[in-house]
Image 1: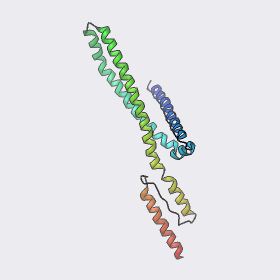
Image 2 (image 1 turned 45 degrees about the horizontal axis):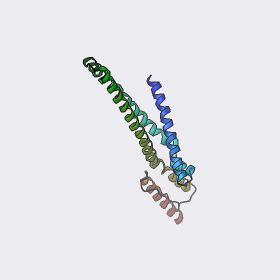
Image 3 (image 1 turned 90 degrees about the horizontal axis):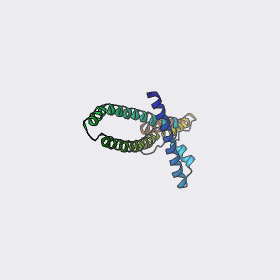
Image 4 (image 1 turned 90 degrees about the vertical axis):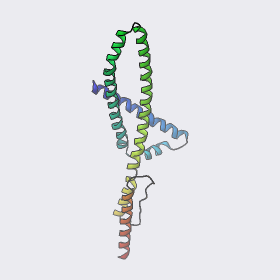
Length: 181
């Protein structure tokens, strides 16, 4: 049962990710930007960048599922007792059914917002981690080819800035030693 639920959640999550990507594509298109290039630049390593939100969301869905199951177990006895002790059980049932439906709709809305926010935040965060790898690899290849004047520069909030600084220092050292020869 749980495996079927997880598989269903994976399918829903995949559809949500596709919907978000299609929305971003339409926004970029409406702005007149080359959406394919922009999306390609934003999702540098899609397998990694989309796997992290998937793991976080699966963990979150598992927590929500467990919370709902425990909540159901906790309130089931209260519900039964309430129905047995009241003379207006039909009215109470309708009221509880309406409140339950409203709660489900609100929970679904909040969960959808959470999913979208989590996807955006994790893709941006992983972009900041993966993005610097590309110029660092270019710099290492340039050093391997003997182009010691090449320097690596990263964006302000990118990770690995210390590594980039050390590689630039190494390039300066190699360049000065080559010039002395």
